[in-house]
Image (cartoon, rainbow, N blue to C red; front, side, top):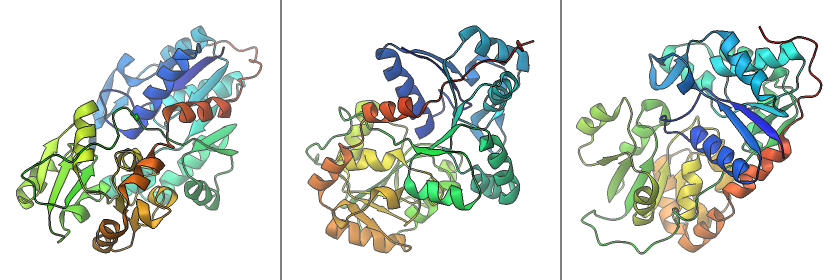
Length: 343
């Protein structure tokens, strides 16, 4: 059994696909007998990112991070995020001449440009430097791998897909509700960079349901009174909302995968989305939904061609067990430590 250290700046109580992936993967690794140490923000002082308050930015003495890593004595180190914790664990590994793996989860260049007006070129330059010494960079899809190669990312890239809790996300009988059909569902952060405005502006008949919360919720609720904002849902309550809808709409142009897309498929929901990284790797047949540069057309086509049974069968392919096995197979041994010791 291996000793695996994971460094992440994204953790509970943040609600995101990254947190869900890391937490579930760590839990499954432990059940398999591996020792897993997660270095995450709750153990350090932090303050919220001004333009993204759900994300804490850690402020810590590097020595505290070094001691955590050294004390655990890992066989493998995986750095999941490019924030302060990821930076200092990376720095420690470089100092000790340890090999490590990284993963590319989030399009920070696009988000920072939209939210804080930081030029994409600056952020991509930093990310290429950050991942440049990784012995393995994990990405979720083939299209993202191709894009990163085209941008000059050089580490060996390996696939790390995502999973679905099939006990929660499954087809269920459609309940009798007061919502006019078709019921179109959005699940995710209620913020402009997620493309939710495109979803809410659709002129399609039926009902738009929004599950999630975020900084734009109050304003969007006032502007779109015809939509139903349900706030956060978790576990069985979230699974019931998925199964009660007729179509899942994924309006983001910037996600690298979209766990909510495979949760929808596993629930028997066709998906309408833009033809971008993530959806284009998952929605590969008409019976699973439709992709179009016009989101309204994608919705119309998905409602016509989507096959709930085919969607559920496709969704069942994405298990957390497969996800964890891929992650474990991608890890690299740290190798021999140098003669340095942490200060």
